[in-house]
Length: 314
Length: 112
Image (cartoon, rainbow over all chains, first blue to last red; front, side, top):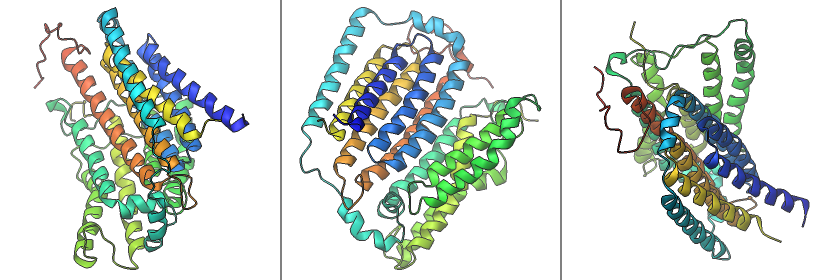
């Protein structure tokens, strides 16, 4: 057994172990922290599976932003835990759940072992047509050209999620700034970090976005890093979210998806298909859409994490 | 010698099973949301293993499923965010965070 095999087997075992921890931990906070560590290890699984773009997304969004959101929720719900734990189902239900879970795992494992050989693949088709898009990263070519409809709908789903989150605030707070106002010691460690890290984070975020045309990276990963930098400044009390009624904020939120729609509609006129790119204009149009999406996505993701408006308008 | 796709495919199957068990047995809604994410991770890793098997044209994996995975991760984040917001709102309005049908004493009354 080679060293990389041993690493992969060890990695799979630790991932399963941490997943068990998130289920078994008595305390929700401990479970959620375990979930963040587990997400970071999943990033390594993605690297092992040669999905570097997916690894970046998992680290930034799946583990990072999701983890931050779950940790905050676990903190807020701490006083409800004792009552909830009293409602733990009895042994019979747990046994039946274990049987159901075992059956699902067995069926999936059977499917994994019965996968067809040779495996079906679309890689040759992507390789044959990637030239026409002008980008070098096949994932970006799929996201922005071959399956651009998915990506456009996804950008709209992110926006819908923010509208959903906002709509869960109390009516009296509508129009106010979302989330609580954070205050921190302006000379403390958090404020210091929030002043020194964002310049570096901005460069990293924009770099990951820019390099996405040819190497692993892209707008979702870049936007998440930009959102995280702003969230850090906000938690240190150095920045505050704009009111949800702000006009320019709403323009910033919809500019990306609207640009995508406009380019798609222009494709219907000039390239014969919705979201088609005219010959020779593919790369510039992809760049226009990506540059428009980056600020919209960063703003939307950051505000989803901030939560609904809760303060009294004033 | 076990190949990487089979190893992580089996690992993914176990993750889905763990998530299903926790989803049914955990009494706390927040833990159910975490379990929902563990199920999602399992499905994504399984899809990733399938993408790895489809490697070709000089790439380590089939780029089409990998791109769909990125879309999937973003949508899964959105679903989680919405679920957590609903849960926090329930806690704010009703003072409880329970999915049990019993404690219906504090009927949720939305504030003005």
